[in-house]
Length: 332
Image 1: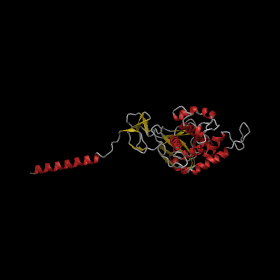
Image 2: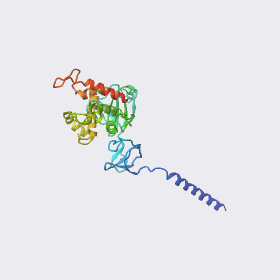
Image 3: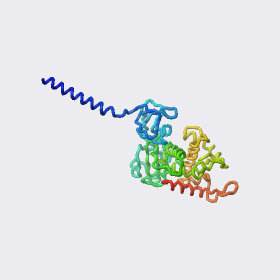
Image 4: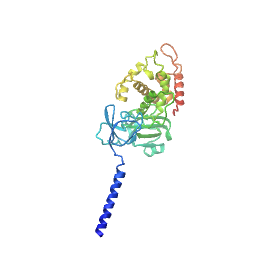
C-alpha cells in the first residue's frame, strides 16, 4: 500500500508539473525568431531577424520600433545580415586633449556626466579637442554644467571639433543609438516632410529637435514644396541648396549617408541641406548663427551685399526661420 500511495503521489505531481509547463511556458516568447518584413511599432528581441529593402537584418538590442528607425537608419539596433549573434559593444567614447586624437585620452562609457562626474574621471572643465565615437553611439557635448548651454551632437569620430566647440565641454551625455524623438509633428507640416526630417534627425542623433528646425527651414525655402513649381531658383528642391554648394559637399554626403547624392530625391535634398546646416551650427556656435550663414554664406556680415550690390538679408531669413522653429516647440 505504501508503494502504491507513493507512486500515485509522484504521478500526480508529474501531471501537475506538466500542466504548469504547458500552460505557462508555451506562452513565453521565443528570444529570437524570423519576424518577416520590418514594421514600426513592433517589439523586437535580440537576434530577431527581419527583412527590409531586400536585405536581412539581425536585431542587436531589444526595442520597440518607431517610424524613422528603419534597420538601415539605426545600425546600433540592427546589423545587416549577421549570424544571429550580437556583436560585442565597443567599450566607450574616447575624448582627447588635443586635435588628431593626441594628448591625454580618457574613455567614458554610456551615461550622463555632470562636471563633477567628469572631474572624477580625470576630465577638467572646458576640455576636449577631438573624440572617437564607436559606430552606432551618440555623444551630446554641453557648453555648461548640468547639460546647459549650447549642445553639440556627435555620431561619428572627429579629429578636430572646431573652434566653436574646442575646450568648451562641461557636461556630457553618451548613449547607444539615437534618442527617441520627444517631439510631435507640427500640424502644418505635411507627413512626408516630417518623415524626411525625422529620418535625418535620427541619423544625426538630435532627439527630434533638429527635425523641427529642418521643417522651419523647408517652410521658408520652399513652402513645404508648394512654392517650387515655376521657381526661378536653381537650388535643389525642399532645402534650396545652390548647385555650387551642393557640388562642394557631394563627397561629404557620400561619406555621411553611404550613397551617392540624388538631387531628384526629396529625402536626399533634406539630407544635404541638413548636413550643411549642422556644419554651420557647429562652426558658428548656435542655431541662430548657423541659420545666418546657411543663408548668407560663411563670410556673411551685417550689411553684406551680393555681386550685384543687393543686400544679403540673412538676418531677416534667420529671424523668420528661428521664430517658426521656436513656434514648433524648438528647445535651443
